[in-house]
Image (tube, rainbow, N blue to C red; front, side):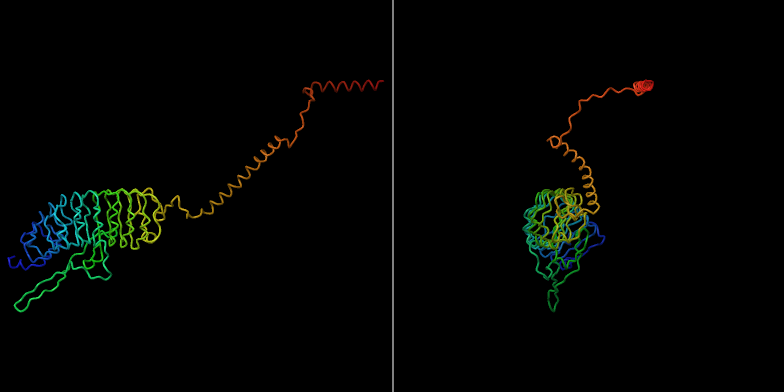
Length: 410
């Protein structure tokens, strides 16, 4: 490519091919380049260096799912709105470059790398950021409290608002007769997100409708990321598979547009706050594999959304209708079945039959003690000692016969 041709290059899409090797640095020197898409190839080596004084129009950079290695680039063109470095072999921490210069950045992807260290707080100054994905890395530390200041994650776009000017590129045509600038909207890849527990693609034409924050599968620890409750425009919040502890913030009940909350595989304790029943668009709440206790709130959206018991699994202290486990303090338990009542009635009659004679004996004994009944005194007559029938009985009979004989002879 000659110097003249490269100076006119505005859009370069090489996505989903089998290109490999290093990215020619000459591509980065195109001062008119606005879109550079190298998605899903086999480019390797370090990232090419962007020259800020040259790339003053580059707005779309997609190097995701290649074999790039090394550190995160330290220079990013200030016009960048879409920046995707996902699915590479980046390592180390985030460089100390000033992200506040990227005031137009709306979409930032660093998932599926080997990044370590802390999440830079300067990200929280990106006032136009709507999609942030740092999942599947080795990031540590707390979730910055400043995340609660991400303006576009707080403010919900007006209904039927036009799509943001992220992928519309102005192309300048010049000829000997006329010069004009036309608007071109190139067809770009769908955004792939973990949406409602599965990988789904979202059209770039509808991205103004969605706001995502995915920090899952890292080593983050935090006792109470309450500041995330301020992000009222969020559709998806995924902070699963970390080392979060403490309680679920009650402020999560303020995420009025949220559809999916994934807090699974952490060390979260306490109860599920009743404020979540206010979330009218919530369809999935996954709190499995934590240390939660108490009753799962029932009411509002919590009573009508998809009730998958797996979303509450491996929390030994949880109870509620969602997992078919009644709570001890629940007053609304169903009545026992009829056979239990019959057994209880039989048991009561058996107690009556056993208790009646015992009570009668006790009552009689008590009345004897108080003198109500008077027993006859024992007799002093002594009975002759018992003798065998064949002894004295036979002698008495003989004596009687002799006496009768004497009376007859007289």
